[in-house]
Amino acid sequence: MTPVLIGIDWGTTSFRATLLSETGDALDRTSGPNGILAVENNNFEDCLLGYIADWNSQYGLLPLVASGMITSRNGWVETPYLLAPSGISQFAKALHQHTMSNGQTIHFITGLTVENNGIPDVMRGEETELIGQLATQSQPFDLYIMPGTHSKRVTISDGSITGFQTFMTGEIFSALKEHTILGKLMNGSEPDRNAFLQGVRTRSSSSDTLLHELFSARTLPLFEKMEQTSVASYLSGLLIGEEVKTVLTGQSSSRICIIGRGDLAELYATAYAALGHPVEMAKPGSAVRGQFEIAKEGGLLS
Image (cartoon, rainbow, N blue to C red; front, side):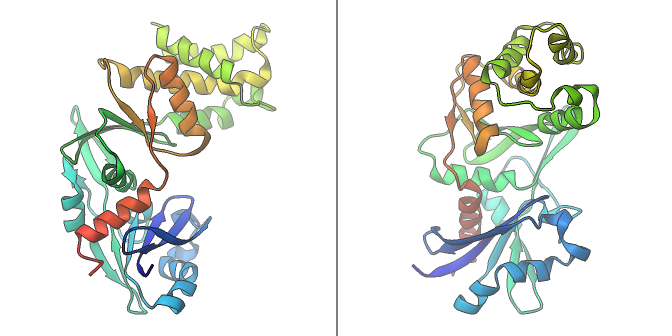
C-alpha cells in the first residue's frame, strides 16, 4: 500500500505519528515523550521533522494532519475553537494550514467548545477521536465517555458533536495523592478491584457530600476497616463513582461507549457495569482514523 498521509497526535505529555495508506491503514508508527511541554524552546518544527525524517527520505514530503494540544495556547499554532454542534465537514473546513521550512505542509485540526449553563467547556484532541469513532461504528450510542486526566461525557446526533461536559476526576485524584495527607496512606498501594467497587458503590448510593466522604479514605484504614494498600483504589472508586453518578443522572437505558485505552478505561467500564449500565469499548485507533477522515474530507489526499 502507498503512503499518502502522516497523522500526528501531539498532546501535553506525548507525541505519536502514524504513516497512513490511501485507505487509512497504519503502515508505520513512531512515538516519544516530546509532548508540547517537553519541546525545547518550543521548536516544534525541528522536533517533528526529527521524528519523521526517515519517512520523508523514503516517501517524499507527504501532507501531515495534526490534532491535540499542539493547537492550544501552549502549542505550535493556537487555532480558534469551533462551536458545537460540529461534525466532520466543519472540522475539515476549519483545517489550519502551515508550511514548514522544508516546504512540507501540516494541517492543524482545531478543538471544540460548548456552553453549559453559560460556562464554556472545551476539548482539543477528543473531537478527532470522536470523528474516528463515528467512521467505524455500526450504530450510534447515546453517550460517549472519554476517560483521562480531564474525562469527557459527550453526546452526538446526526454525525455532529452536540454537547459535552469535562470532569477533572483524574487530576483531582493526582492532586490528592501527591499533595494531601491521603497520599501518605497510598504508599505501597496495589490495584484492588473490591476496594475500587466499594468506593464506586459508596458514592452512588450516598446522599452525603463528596468532600465529606473523601475523608473516609483516611478513617477506614485508621480504624483497620480497610487495608492501607487498598486506599488508592478506594479513593479512585469514590472519584470515578461521583463522575458516573453525575453522568447517569436522568439516564435510563442509555447505550454507552467508552473511548480510551488501558487500565483507566477498564476502571470506567467496571464502574458503569457495577451501577447497572454495561458499556461497549471502542476499538483502538480512533484518533488516527479521525485524522484520516478529516484529511480526506478536507481534500488533502488528492
